Length: 254
Image 1: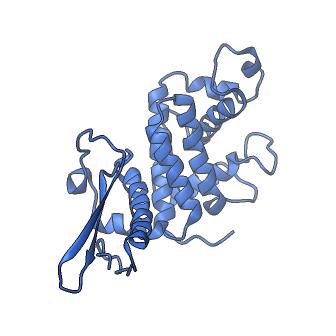
Image 2: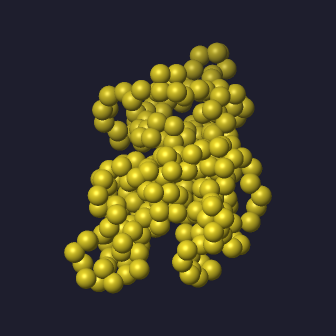
């Protein structure tokens, strides 16, 4: 019988193999939750499974992970975490395939050393979440004005924008501060989408590429070539905000 983790129900496993499958799923889900809270990928060292014997002794098996210890990352209260929050997000990810996919993309983006690929995965995380949290209707800017550009029905930009705007409004978050170094949320969304487009169509952004200069998204992509690290930090924090909202709410099915 597997021991519970902070409020989790006991789950009975018939043998080591079934216990390993159950524990592996829980570890994967917990890794994703920790990556959202610590904004760094969690790397388990080993899984230990104990089987209770009839004489009250126990038989153990150790399943090591291919992980090299690289020091501790601050967690717990010192990092602003709470067991209740971790548990709520752990539960929220169970059975939510879109949130799990988005959290996986986010975790991959955190570990990505190529900035173009990181932008691509952060945007993919937001786009996936917008399938459940976004709006399919006409989208207006926060100030009430219509969407500034003509877009097709499959363009994810307005849907991602509407999703983030709704969350910011529900939490009374100051839009310009949240969107920096973008001038506002529209600028942020367009810039992140532009970097996604550059990577999807050209393998990465190249400011000197004449082919990319001819694309409508080029000016927004060019913005991110200045203070790129801060743009990535804002992309990361935006994903965290939306992921936490998705894991703590029960949006209607689409």
